[in-house]
Length: 72
Length: 266
Image 1 (cartoon, rainbow over the protein chains, first blue to last red):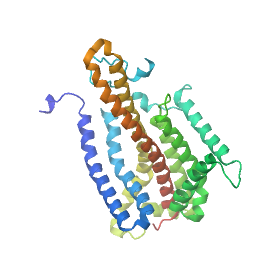
Image 2 (image 1 turned 90 degrees about the vertical axis):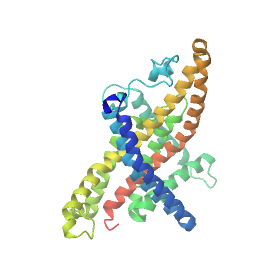
Image 3 (image 1 turned 45 degrees about the vertical axis):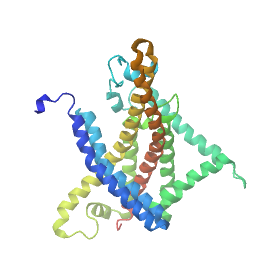
Image 4 (image 1 turned 180 degrees about the vertical axis):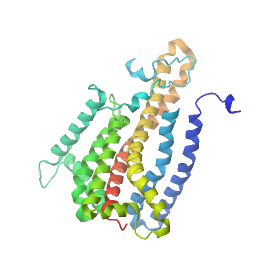
């Protein structure tokens, strides 16, 4: 089955690597929006923390992106 | 057809999109070897930053010009929101010059990506993000050692309040994540975002140009080029946001790393 696949398999790997961070960023941003709506006076803090959370979550997807070039 | 260097072998009669041939160039080290476009643009970015700050702030008057106000609000943003907001009012000002130069250099360098006729983000060559990330690494390690002395090593391995039984495991995880994963992810995040944007813009806009300009050879098939080009222009707008956001995130994370080494309790 695997032998019949044509093209670089790293493409599939990167697709898999993007699933988790995709869900994670969704959770981070969703909760940040909830925090901003509930406490608009804290919106600045929530936004900064949201970017931090996105940046940490995104790192996993980026490692997949680089491995795609290295292994592909 | 110099524009199309990235996709020199693109054959609009059979291909659907013009794929670049060689991506190894992305991993070159721009500091090694001959004087090239990357180094020229890097020097240009440095000169632009110095010029912006000089002409924006060298005259202090009661009625600042529009340009002066814009530069001033950029500087104030970095000082109040990043340096003081993250690191704290006393220590923040000590690291503010580094954070400001980092932010402005990356901002100008990333905006080269969407500058017409330049179209090249300097951070899309791995050498530059790696160097900046190592600089941040040295700064936060030295900041921790200067602030806490050798106790910094202990705080680095074991955050306060870790049970004895978990100390080996937590120590190992913290050691790897602080000293190795932090600089790597810092560099790769900027690099990958810039490369992905640059690659997408190149693919879409070049495909659009190649297909439409070959209308004499391929006839009705040239219509493929129009959606590619329109999509490319949409990505172009999106890349403005990405360029600014990545400069901000790099600076923000540098500030957070410095903050965690001088205030271990957080």
